[in-house]
Image 1 (tube, rainbow, N blue to C red):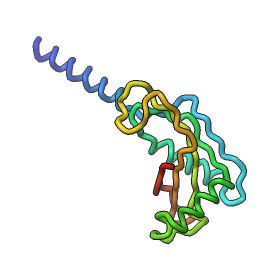
Image 2: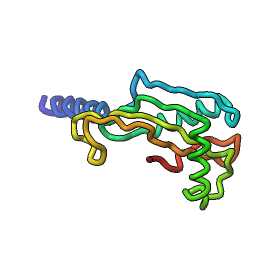
Image 3: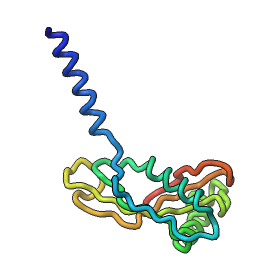
Length: 142
């Protein structure tokens, strides 16, 4: 009987830990692909998916991701001239910058970000080897 209780407790604990470790992406996440002459809708959607899959800030919920071509081009240019792009020789057509907003809850479980706050215009710089390869996050932040 004791073995059954311990086993049930272990299973319950495992489910609890898995539930607490879920990525914090909002069911009502707003995405905006925007207009683009540089990338197709599919390319931008794929980049947005990569950001959603890589968002894993503790005690935080992603609320909005968007592409704005003018802003992306400006930030891409800075990345290529003085950021990691100046080192890795990524071509301009293989860089996309997405912007995002996210909320941090008031739990204090995030040791870096301010509790009970909203971060806006957080940048995600994604690169790829060529038009046929997948996007990957190369840098993020402000």
